[in-house]
Length: 136
Image (cartoon, rainbow, N blue to C red; front, side, top):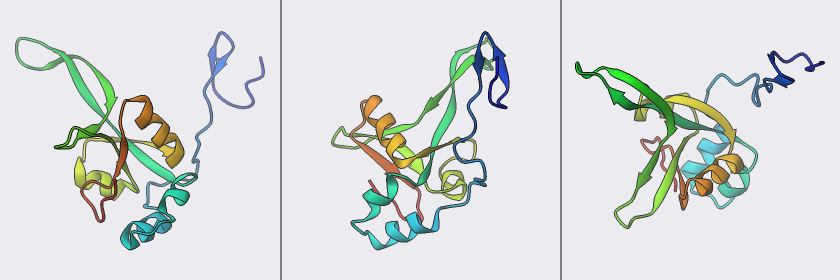
């Protein structure tokens, strides 16, 4: 079966190509500028621009010594004092590392991040929670 140059997983399945093949994790300067300006065009820009959604390892079981026996990867959300839930997303690897240097990035469009937030029961995206400028 022709997989269009993508690696075959067998059974007719293949891996999709990367959505952002030239992405080096640098912050999008347009998003950073709009965040700093608190501009109304931020929502429009987020629709097609790349964000990094953070995933972290979560221990499912630990052995008697306290070491991870099994774990899974999960996206990260925060709950505000009022009970609202927000999915964490970042404009670049630098802002993600400021929050948690062990988190792993998943590059997605802002609209896909918003869809993932809604699917996870969140009411918002929390962008660059540790700065340089945070937006909700």
